[in-house]
Amino acid sequence: MNKSARSQWDFGELFLPEQTRKVLSVSELTTQIKRLLEKQVGLIWVSGEITNLRAQSSGHIYFTLKDAGSQLSCVLFSRETVAHRELLADGQKVLLQGDVTVYEARGQYQLIVRAVELQGVGALQAAFEKLKAKLAAEGLFATERKRSLPKYPQRLGLVTSPTGAAIRDVLHVIQRRHPGLEVILAPCRVQGEGAAAEIATGIRRLNELAASQPLSAPDLILVTRGGGSLEDLWAFNEEEVARAIFESGLPVVSAVGHEIDFSIADFVADLRAATPSVAAEIITQAAFASREFVADVPALMQLRARQRLERARERFDQTAHRLHLAHPRRRLNELAQRIDDVMAGLLRQARAGVREQWLAWQQLAARLGRVRPSHQLKQRREVLTLECRRLQELARQRWQQFQTAIQTANARLRLLGPEQVLARGYSITTDAATGEILREATKITRGQRLKTRLKSGEVRSVVGD
View 1 (spheres, helix red, strand yellow):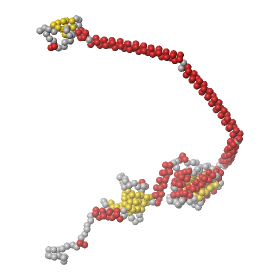
View 2 (view 1 turned 60 degrees about the horizontal axis):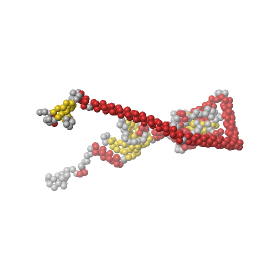
View 3 (view 1 turned 135 degrees about the horizontal axis):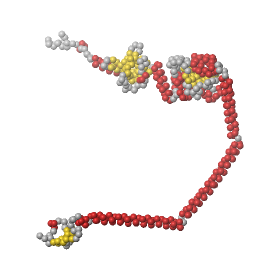
View 4 (view 1 turned 90 degrees about the horizontal axis):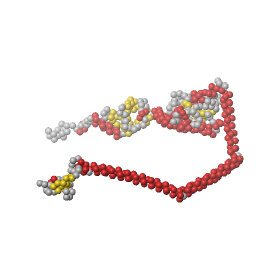
């Protein structure tokens, strides 16, 4: 018994305050944990690999984010506007932003995703697909714009690293198949930061050389490098390189990586080769085949000679034409022609003036002829005759109309007249003195003299009793 009790019935506190237990329900505990997580952790970024991805018919996506030591349940609701939603897949490495909370129904903490960023190869692949779709929509991959390669190129513009394996493979194939092919190297880096800009610059420099020095310019351009990972080959997936290939005035061959590697440069180029060696074989194919068909050489030499002669003839014709244009006699001939044109113009103006005066005189004569008194009297007399005839015809028509109206009125009067009533056996009784028609018997007085009209004749009478 507690010592603080003051009587035998006062037992005091049976349990000390520190011994009292606070019991929570599962829901209360889960709610407190949820509030604590949302308050203390809140919106965070988490990286990991996606697994167990499930897309529900409602549009919500459920998946687990894991790493080597743990895993986290995640949910991406359909109402959230999140980029790269369609690229989420099992095995994808991602960087997620979201709110940490607790799903109370299962007592499980989870991440409500607000943003998604792809990592590693996934991010590069997404950027690749996005740029590919953009350039395809602009027509950079169109088949109709791709050009055929020259059959017998004399010079090849090579855009690659001067220390890589690709240049050794290309030069080895050229030396073996077409030793006479000149190679103009535009050295550049083929991977790492700034490589894309150097590749694009190399393509543009070769095009500038073709514009400024046509006789020593390359006939086509080969853009190449050896195999590697997607990150290593990424310089050839940059938009700057694609634009440079698209704008190139020279045909471009792209040979990037191995046979299974495809880059944006491959889609834009006029021809895609599986490897650098294959590209060199394609470029030297005609020259290599010509070894077996020597008969083509004379024709090619004749073609080259004919082209040189044609170019020389064109230059000669242009020079002669310029001299002809600058000759003094041409200027004198032009002045003489101008004088002839002016004289012809003056003659035309004189003839036109005379013609205008003649037409004006004829119009004036016609006007004077129209205003002669005899002519006007004749016209007025004709008008007066026509008006008299019109008035006579109008009077005759009105007279006929009046005759018809009178006949119609007479017929109506005959039909409405008392003679028609009397003819049917009726009679009309009037006061003999006043002639007033009598309609009621009550108004007749004794001794009144009456006159009754029949169809034929009258009867006179006196009213009696």
